Length: 308
Image 1 (spheres, rainbow, N blue to C red):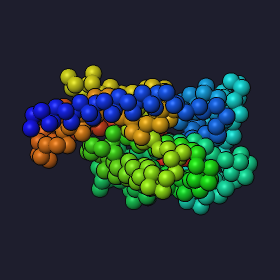
Image 2 (cartoon, rainbow, N blue to C red; image 1 turned 90 degrees about the vertical axis):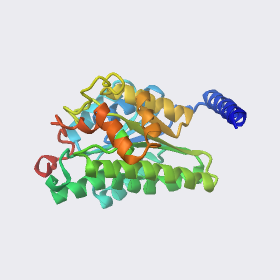
Image 3 (cartoon, rainbow, N blue to C red; image 1 turned 120 degrees about the horizontal axis):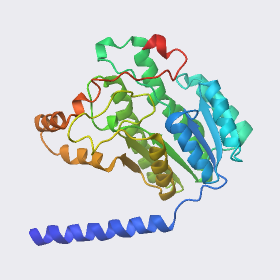
């Protein structure tokens, strides 16, 4: 039994190394690609746009914040990048479809779609206004579905494209005061996973998916949220530029899932334990207390102040 397990582990390791080396040798060239980033006027989205521009991609930014859109466009164009900007509310299905068709008419195609936009409330479930619940779900998962439904047919026709889902570790681990947000991020992880296997089953081998799941990111959205224990060095608050760099690397290598930081992958080992043991470990580490000092959720949508 021991020898069988040993050989199985060796074969698995050899296959994994072979697979990774193949991906390193066949990295995707992003030069000339048309990349659309939702929520691309600031935060992680803007950094992803900058990194994609550095790879030679043309940039399409979708956001509700007109002022930041114009600022981001000017900054990118100063780098010699071709930039298209569209102002819209991604929580409104009809707007996503309308601006999606307009984008295709004016730009021609979308090769890389980065679903990045997101909002959070940071309250206990019974304290969140009903309208805010609808908004979180519409933005954090609804917009993903409608953007993919808009641009996937073209990717399928060309058998070429990449769909990136910026989710969260909240899509794997639940934390108090994040019920609706976590529900939307679990949904985003599931959506990306199912989309990947659908494409694989239908043999669209040129259309790839990547799901990025970072710990808290220093964008203002989760201001105050952090790990306040001896284990904080394992799970630091991440910088948006770092998350963006890892995302671009994953796109080029066609990685399906990115967990940030690396130590966050330990959650998959914890899941093997009974639920009470999982709760004890996560509570001991301090994960369940990370939202206690939360005072973030800077306005991302024009009406978020009234909803939150």
